[in-house]
Length: 133
Length: 133
DNA sequence: CTTGAGCTTCCAGTGACTGGAAGCCCTATA
DNA sequence: TATAGGGCTTCCAGTCACTGGAAGCTCAAG
Image (cartoon, each protein chain N blue to C red):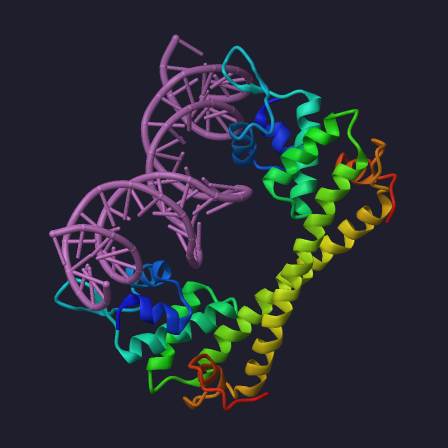
């Protein structure tokens, strides 16, 4: 399989696949013409990576997950630990975004958004705390 | 004021303040010895930037917000537009994270996390859909 | 034989910093 | 007066995970 077909079937762009090879996540063989020659297992790995990335796992997490995947003697606890840590990082991010959202939506509601210069959003950003909230 | 004091009072690290000068967000004067000489207005601007960044606005948004802040003839509608767009970007991000969270938490729950290799998380990532949900 | 798509490598840029090195400046103390 | 330290300066490189683009090779179709 050439890179184009693998890209199509895995949903990962060719550029990204080459990048993954660069950093050692996949190691496709080479044909005589210098083209990368992917096997089914490579495709499988790339699809795995695609799904892990879609769940927000970092590349390093993906690397570890892949090696656990290939390790018949793994303990599921190792996988679960990675996933739990990631889950809690996601929770932190959500909480942080929701806090921003909270503040910002109050400010947006308080701003008339007309032709006049008076603006509670700028007032808040400037440190003037005599505001909504 | 030297950079150290401004950093302390604005809560923005010296490195970041220099970076902000690099990209033209602040333009402190210079003393005879080559040190940056910040005025109160610079400090004010930096504090403004700190709050805007804390709300997740991009540097480009911050640049625009700052210039609106300094423009007496602005229309609050311009500010509100920036804020609304950012708010909806935040909402998108939250939604995306919650989707990840959803999937991931199901997988984590389904994984026993013991010494055995059997793992629903890896099964899901590998594309095996005969899973929970 | 040409055309055009697909493949190759390499270099640079993204966003928003952050770390580190080399070296100048200033003040306080021995 | 020498020196030690802390603060300041600039510049370069690294982060994360790609992504774009240029130059050039290969392959299949017409």
